Length: 534
Length: 99
Image (cartoon, rainbow over all chains, first blue to last red; front, side):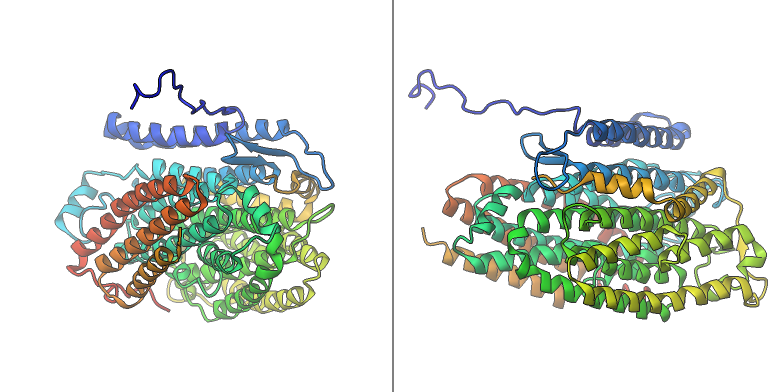
């Protein structure tokens, strides 16, 4: 064959990649790979410390690189504010929203690493099981615990998940999004099953999350296949052109959009695809729940907005009614069902479902232009919610009894007397979830509702306010329980953690209050980030 | 090229997989049904690649195969660890997490 083509030159040109622009992503992936090498070569005694150091330094370096990339983004000419654009041969779109999401995810990642590194609560061992391969309660498990073996692999796993989240939020074609979705999900499935205490619950959570997650990503993938069949390309810009031109095959497009929406709604935990959320949030090790609750929701929401605003923007009247319906059901269901919860982690899971509904309200508004846009509202809400949810789960790791964390709400009665500082911190997070003024959650809810109102989705705003009122009732009941209820038996006991967990709680409280009192600079930042660039 | 028979077959395989996930109780078989769904996607990808006259869909099929292999590694690790604990891989037995 080669002889038949004299002088034939390879038609494939080397890709032209601007490594500087995608450096935050490369740093996190590099740290993950280096973490695998540390696992292989560093002696066990130094492994945990070196993994923590590597992960923390890597995340901070990537954050610095993100800031540098962000200040360098060139504004795009046009009628709406936008900056940056596709890079790496169109595979990634490093635009304003992508860079803000990167910074947000790296912030969550740093808090997550600090929580993972906490060892004082379990008597010098991390919250992850000594050897995941040993059955719970077996002789092997006790031996591994006695030898103080630890799974420091969680740090590279978390870095891979973080890189997947960052890729997911900035991928500019559907195939890249699928790969990113799996890169973020697979490490999380594993990390969910690694709890030191209550391992049966943890393994069960991992299996449920894995089977349902794989099921939903198959829907996502079939949706991608149908959209590819319709548009002839994975590229969001080319799909957008095909959608706007209304080419043949509307049925395939509608089916594809529906399947993609199912896959993404599963990841953001919207009703009726929420069934995994309470079980996984409850069963997973609490630091993993904190990282997952904040990170997955942020990455999946930005990816969902990018797909539906950029690629399917021309067909918005086909998907908007579905988003309206799901937003209403999700808000009301999350708020009402959280009232019935008796477990703190499940309660936070249902509150996370309700928050997915509030975020969908902003998406349904579909506002772009100047002032509050759907994208900027979602970005602000995700930052405020993520900081509060990580802080809340960090508090959950502190309230303990002999068997580990005690998550039953009745055992939390009288926490305010036992440890006023912890109870006040938890109250601040709950008030932020409820959207009380002077917390980040209030400004977040306000921007989300303002965006929806601007876009004419006022029925959603009305339902959102009603759902907030229902949720408020519940959050206030928990606050009353913390401060005014008589403690059961000895009452809850609050463990003394290392400065790592304290700093996570402190940072989360600070961010929640600063975003509530002085939100201007961040609001300005998310509005300057502008729209998605295809 | 008439794509309808191929897409019909892929939709049928996808539906079989989806129904299998919902009705079967053994975690391994549920997982196999998920793999069947992924392979149905692959069939759709290569069919549409032929119909659209570009190679993107065929490349996608390779990506999906690699992702499916990675998913097997993670999935079997989780299912085996549960089997070691419970001596059962039934998804109905794993029911501690409830209201």
